[in-house]
Each structure stands twice: as C-alpha cells, then as structure tokens.
Length: 231
Image (cartoon, rainbow, N blue to C red; front, side, top):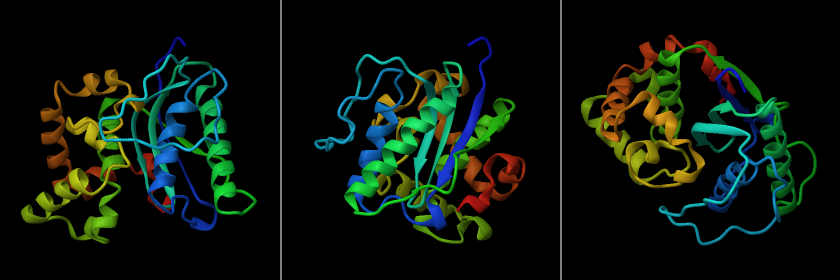
C-alpha cells in the first residue's frame, strides 16, 4: 500500500452484553487476533488454545493483513490501534475476526445470533500526537475495573502508583505490558509502532504516567477518536 494510515477500530457486544465471560474467552480472542491476521486461511479455527504463558510467542510465517500497534480487550468491547498493510485490510481482518469470535462464543455458550453491535467502527488517526494519546487511552481502559469513576475524580500520587500496579500485576489482556517492557503477548504487535514513538519502554512508562496524571485534559483533545459512549 502506498500510504501508511493508522486507525482506531472497536466494537462492543450487542445490547452491551459481555463478550468475554472467563479467562479462556480472553485467551481465545488473543489467539484470534494473531491467527486471523493472515491472508491465508486460518487452520483449525475452533481448536482449544491451551498452555499460554506470559512469555509465550506465537510466531509463524504469516501474510499479515494489518499491523497492530496497541490493543485491549474489555468485558463487553475491544479496542485496536492498527494500520492496514493490504488493500481493504481493516475490513478483511475484522470480518474474519468478528465472525470467528462470534462462532466460537455461540458454540461454547449455546446461543445464536449476532454477538456484536453491528459492524466494527473505525476512526482515522491524523497525526503522531493523536496516536500517542490514543495508545495511552487504550491502555488505560482496564482501570475502570480497578476503580470505577477514576476518570472523573482524577488520581492522587498514591492512586497513580496503585493504578500502575493493577495494570502490571492484575490485567494482561492488552498490549500495555509489552509496551511496558514485560513480555506478555509480544507477537501480536508490530515493534515498529513502539520504535516510531519511543526509544525505549522506560520512555513509554514516563509518558504514560504523565498522561494518566492529566487524563481528563488529554482525552478532551481526542474525543472524536475514542467515543466514550462505546462503554
């Protein structure tokens, strides 16, 4: 593709229903984010995925559809920050990903019908400043599980440290740990994304901590990218 474009894409469960009910659902989705990011047909898409560890590496030969820079899985929605690497890459990936996830979920929980609230949503990210803001926003999403209402009240210095500890110790379903310098699911993301914005994980850590301190002000500048009502 001639032009490198970055997008925030996301979707949530129909009627705001939970699409991840237990740890194995998240793990299955991690597998799908990797497996369906391939021009070739996915092999045995319904097989059970077991034996993951935090250092597990999924590497295999792929013909990627998109480059994933950041991601996060929440109970009833997901976020991706990515760039298509083939024509119509976003549509190709999300079609495979959405259908595959819905099929496995419906089979496992003996239900039928749509899992997601319509087609995935996408917003073009205009520049690197917006991209930095968006990466931090995506990685901060799980803090709603740690302390509901933190966005409105802000964080004290002690709360900031507790929030960072929660993201490091108690939540693994995002790319934050890999950006933080801790191997989690490193094969999902394109390392060139990180190198584009930060020289090292330590530089990202400092940026992210400062970003959290001024969350409300920072998110005001990217409202069109995040659409808080998704939650």
